[in-house]
Length: 290
Image (tube, rainbow, N blue to C red; front, side):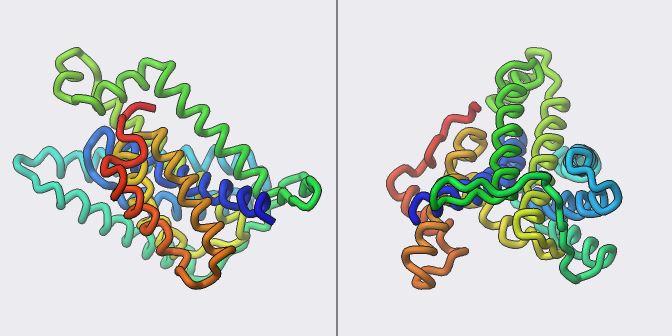
């Protein structure tokens, strides 16, 4: 049924957008593609798994995992990216290579510490599926949709209604002028990492609950789809990232269902990216504001 598949695509697209949001915010500030954000996706999923296994409290699980992962992001910037970018005449490829290495390291550490096997969340969401005629809304889908909308509303409020959000926008527009105007650009950068890594952690937990399984390789597919989404949405554009995530989620779902295995599912994101960029090279939304 078409409506059912559209809902499926929106759910998947929401998770994609949430995963890519961190890399979008970080690119907006630092002009680097942070592949390690996909590592936060994995780390957050595992941190959430152990917290939920101990407490069976869903709200506490999301809050603690997002907070811990967000602080890890701040530490990574302070002790890794910050010193690298402070070097004179640094090549833009260096931070990218560093982020790829950090992402690989994260997966290997998770494998060594938590084991290589699959772990199941077995989350009790406390409510049952909703049936609307032939359309079925599973509890996990409802959780993903609710939390995604909630987190994006929080992001919109932070970026548009707080001084820190305005500082982020000013720094993303022109860091030199922002500093000259007395804006604390370091705090704006820290905001990118806190929000970005915590959102990735939330996405990792959502996927773990959606499919009831997590593995150390959980971030491999999101790591490259994330690149397609942030380019498609217009580099550094939070609103464009949301739109691009939904477009790719819907495209993957509908094409996979109605065209079968004729086009490999994981290649659809890049096919959509190429087609859009041929028409609009700047992406769907090139303006860097929320």
